[in-house]
Length: 394
Ligand code: PMP
Ligand code: GLU
Image 1 (cartoon, rainbow, N blue to C red):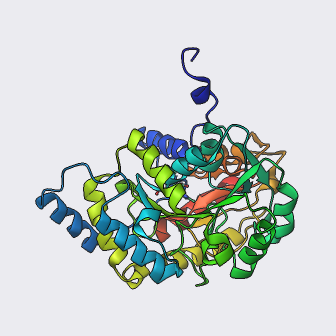
Image 2 (image 1 turned 30 degrees about the vertical axis):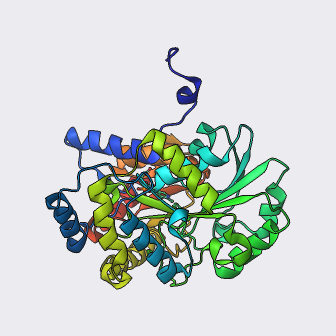
Image 3 (image 1 turned 60 degrees about the horizontal axis):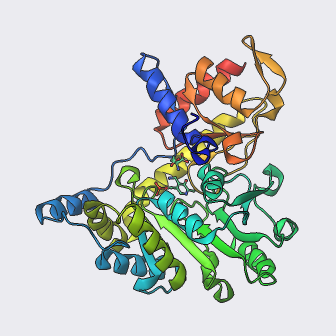
């Protein structure tokens, strides 16, 4: 440990990936764990995307790609941004990376100096705070709760701004709360930012298509925000392609160029076969993935109904993504099956040990009263998992 850098010693382990690894380990020991911890669609990658990858292998795509992505892929991304979001980007504004996680890392590394503050509405996606810290930034948490549907208001944003504020990072649909910011809510946030022209926005829209209310809005759609918004997206969620590792940004030219420079020293660019496959994914009409969205919608209904039957779990109705984020604080201080539950981490461990169900503690998302349950699992698994949770807690 002493020999390692302070940077790595100060870094938390990704709680989502750690829980998934723990569930895998217990399963290898023969335990019948139901994994509702990882945000990973349980569908196969669509056949037409797989076929494009096979063709790319046979067509001998094996060389380094342009660092910021194949031109054909950039063009498919440009078409997607225009078609789905009404956003106009040119090739020099697009950077393809090894997952949206790397896109976020690039942004932090090219935008932040030591001590720069990044406002994170809580709950935020697990890796935001650590990516910011790893790059010298200071995460500034803005607390929200179930009473305002886990959304930051314009007033809360304004109160969190200081002379050191450099960026605002948020996801909509939100991982972990499933909340979706409406156009009016985003406009109200943009109105505050008008007074602070040096603040930039990272708008993480990776769950864009997994939206049950229909209206997805991008911060960059506002003309006055376009020049200081970085729109992040990827194919992991909507196309069930988590392992293919492709994410991308649309950004002001100078930010995209900086990300390209950064990536040129770190990865040399994303995998060539995956990039060719993603061209076909993004060129396709979104109706081709509707069967997955419809199934997530069914599962949401199912899990919300089942959770309703558990005393002490208070859940909002998520409008997108595939998570529920129940407040479980009614159990804090109580002893169940000889184990005292004092916080969300205790609850998550209790459920793993006593119900054999893997979830993630809300602490990892900046909210210590909640746990995250992913419903990217079959309806049978969801029914069995919630039954076990109910029994363990009763
Ligand atoms: N942003 C959010 C909100 C996420 O939930 C995830 C999880 N996959 C990512 C970014 C990163 O996605 P990936 O690196 O798989 O593209
Ligand atoms: N984004 C997913 C999640 O929140 C995958 C895990 C990760 O990338 O950390 O579970």
